[in-house]
Length: 151
Image (cartoon, rainbow, N blue to C red; front, side, top):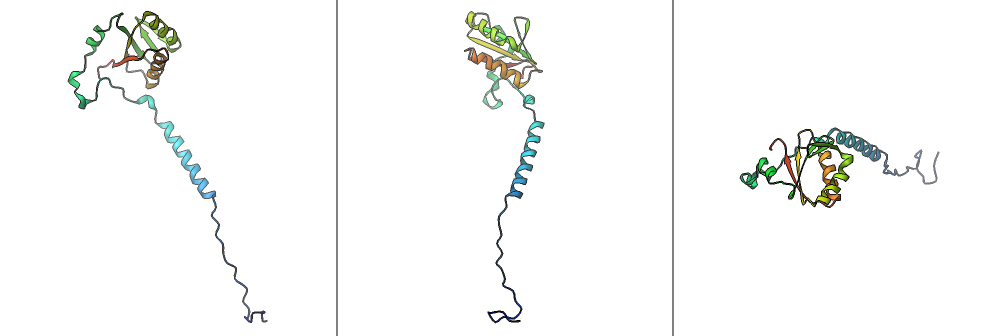
């Protein structure tokens, strides 16, 4: 049987078209999203090491000792707060974070220009951030951080 072009038994060859599909790309992006979400939840930022004083290369000999800092902090010059896990100790009394607004308002009434924060080992970074945000919102910007363990 002959076709009109004179060729015997051949069918016309259609040209293949390759289409780019986004499905494999979407699958890979979903797997990456799940991987990074899982790996981000495994690293807690509460385990960051807090150290007081300048970096070691900037002359650690000029760092004031903790007793000197406390001795130089009287009621006219400022106040001393101890930050623990979920609480602040001021004047020997333990306060929860819900009382921070009242404590900062009291500091403003006393016109305390600075606050010395003594950070205990059990305190997390989030605890410190909550206290610093409350002080900043109350208009107290002169804050000094000291580690309770001395380093």
